[in-house]
Length: 148
Image (tube, rainbow, N blue to C red):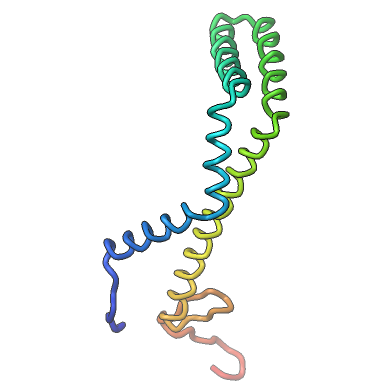
């Protein structure tokens, strides 16, 4: 039987997760994201383009449902042009990059947690850290050969 000392409750783990989330919320990546988002919300040209893009999306759906492929193509071209214009605005580019940066940070945290838990399981069961195989299973019997 494995010793069960110092086990954590789900509540304790979730409290630590909230603490970690609070730390992440105070990183330069998240700070930049919040500032970029604010600038975008207060940028009239960006907001107009976003509104126009939403209208074009609705038009495309409507024309598709009416089975009017030539109108769908026309509106799709207009949509792409608006999208390119939006993407050419520096604050939009910076905002999109900040989304990627925050996402990367969250992904790294997830990966570290996953790998560390897996490692602990392997080590705590007497497994092989090189192969990632857990221990504690029945001994493998070697058939034939010199040492059976």
